[in-house]
Length: 137
Image 1 (cartoon, one colour):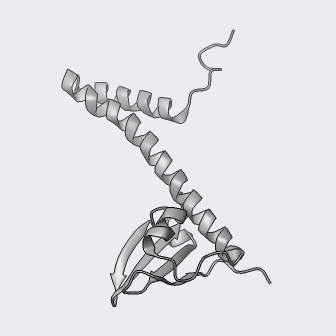
Image 2 (spheres, helix red, strand yellow):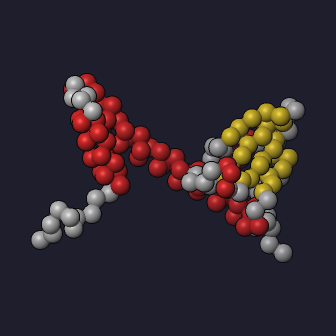
Image 3 (tube, rainbow, N blue to C red):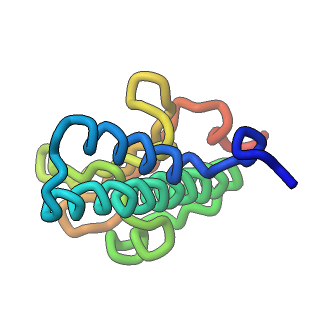
């Protein structure tokens, strides 16, 4: 039988336990405040799913760029249907611009893929500076 010290707990459970300890030791023992603490665990799980989805979208687009499979002239809706929602979406000079990156990386330490659509919503370009996404020769 394992002792308490030998048991391994998931990071979410550890975070919840530490948060509960801090919450109770700070003198905030009112019952309505417990809901805030419980929501922290749910938010952590949702954030983890979002990071995984952003990474999956980036890797799929990177692979298709490398293999030359990104269809030219495709609509915004079709593009997002294939590669998911971008991390950033903006409009520059009448063109819609999207950016995809690894979900677990910051903008300062991550390669990203810039995607541009014309005013009619058709793909103009999808570019990455990453050698991992460059077309095979």
